[in-house]
Length: 193
Image (cartoon, rainbow, N blue to C red; front, side, top):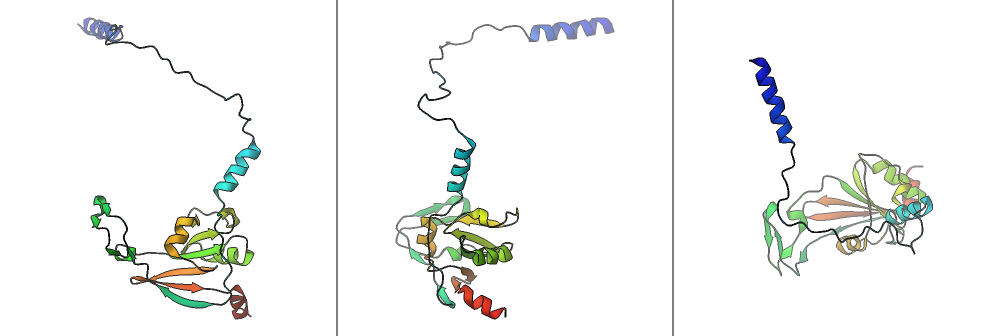
């Protein structure tokens, strides 16, 4: 009896792998794969390195702060378009005054730095685990990588949204406003003596 069951199982498996024939209309594949354009140059390591460097470099430039000061900034804007984000239950009509800080809390500071200033990169190294570092005037690779650090490249849209004036600057949320601490690096070195 066992031999019959084993033979039936083998026979069922043999028939399971048979060709079932053609189902539906078949069309030829007319597309050609073009592996390499005749006019394109070979991708070298140098080209890859240049592309990575360009992708990790901020082209936004701001001056260094001439004096240290604190100022407050209200990020409220009048909306030019409707905002609909059903996932977050946010539905706001055009023309409404909108403050993004009404909808969330920043759990970290933002530190805006000039990546070409070694004193400012040292400041970023010191605060990188408590702050989101926003890099201007240079490459994010000037700051030592750490998986727990949040390092971003400043873009034109960031500058338009946050309206920074000089570097380095801390943006610290205080209720529905930002306290912005603009720092003259010379004042920091005086304080350490």
